[in-house]
Image 1 (cartoon, one colour):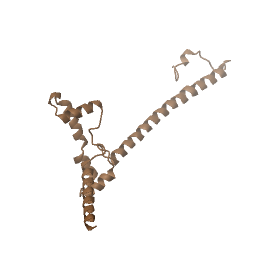
Image 2: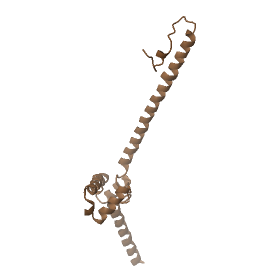
Image 3: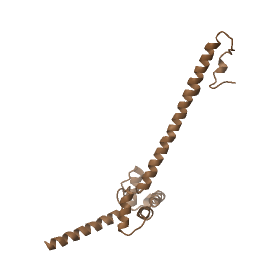
Image 4: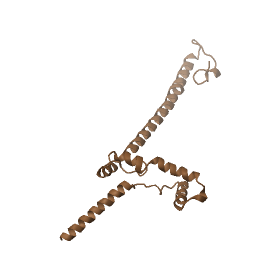
Length: 169
């Protein structure tokens, strides 16, 4: 048998009672402690640490998915408040499923890849060029029609209020 690491077959056999038996025993035990315990435990520790980092990364990803919209990266609370003011219940889910469905964007990218280049419209050509370059400018980052509609409504209300105040003064 070759022992833990396989070096014992290269060393000569030493039995208890031999003159160099205590030194050989000390050497064998120290070798076992260094290689058999410390190095293997270091490797196991690195593996456990790597899995911990992966778990932490996954938790951060899940938190991000539950607190921000996938496409536009708008805070969930803002979407919920704006949707509620427009009479939409479950605003975040509504926004994710109907206003900015991630699968619609993916289907559009696949459509661009399947469609012959000579049949592209102007916007399709521009977006295909950006997608191939890895540029995401065509995506509505920090924009949503739900938010823009609410902002426009607020501006209209503010403008109407200012006109009324101007008439009174």
